[in-house]
Length: 57
Image 1 (spheres, one colour):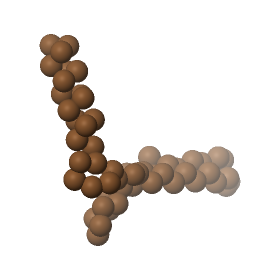
Image 2 (cartoon, one colour):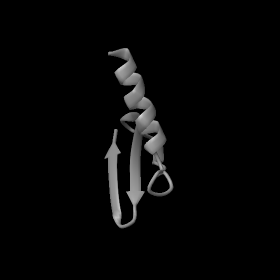
Image 3 (tube, one colour):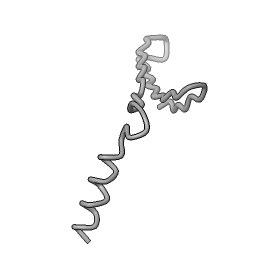
C-alpha cells in the first residue's frame, strides 16, 4: 500500500504545471475591532482565467 501511495503522490507532483504554469492561491485576512470585540476573517481564492473559486473562514 505504501509504494502505491508514494508512486501516486510523485505522479501528481510531477503533473503539477504540466499543461501550463501552476495556479497560485490568494489569501486575504481582515482584523477589525468594534463594540462586539475583536473580529477576524480569512478568505482564500484561486483564479484561472475568467473562473474564480473562493472560500471564507
